[in-house]
Every structure is written in C-alpha cells, then in structure tokens.
Image (cartoon, rainbow, N blue to C red; front, side):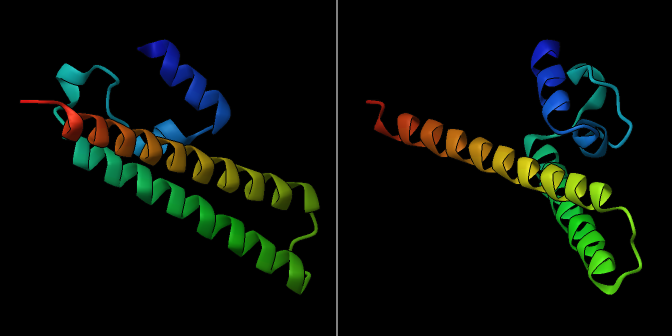
Amino acid sequence: MSSGIGQINRVVPGLIEKTQNNQALDPAETKTSFTDLFNNLLNSVNDLQFDSAEAQKLLATGEAADLHQVMIAAEEAGIATELLLEIRNKLVDAYKTLMQMPM
C-alpha cells in the first residue's frame, strides 16, 4: 500500500501531505472516512488550481518574473486534475460493476 502512495506522491508532489492534513499514514490511526479523504483530495486539487491561476495572473500583470515556477504550478494542477479524474473513473467503474452483480 505504501508503494502506491509513493507513486502518487512522485506524480503530484505535496498532494498526499495536503490530503492527509499531517495525519499518520496508518489507516488504524487516522480514523477518517472515505468521504473525508475524498473531500480533502478535492480541496487540495482545487487549491492547486487556484494557485496556478494566481501564478498565471501574476505573470500576466508582470509581478512574477519566474516563468518556470508558473509553468510548474500549471503542470502540477493539470496532473492533479488528471489524477482526480482517473480516480473518479475507477470509482464509477467499480460502482457499475457492483450494480451489475446478481444478488
């Protein structure tokens, strides 16, 4: 399980820390529900999108001189959004599979 978290953390650096809110990675210690975890993930992706938009705004107005940081923020937000969409797609597929199971 920790290898998957490490892979996600490599794709979107800092995303795991934002979603965990400084909690331990052991599920027995966290006691958070799936809804809370997913809401934290949505909020962290939203924050990345807002940070990227703010950086682009600062670059457009001439207040930010570092184009590299603006591009990095935009890519982080894009990758986080793609990751969130893939998670959503997997959840929808799992739901459809469960609904098609005979009782």
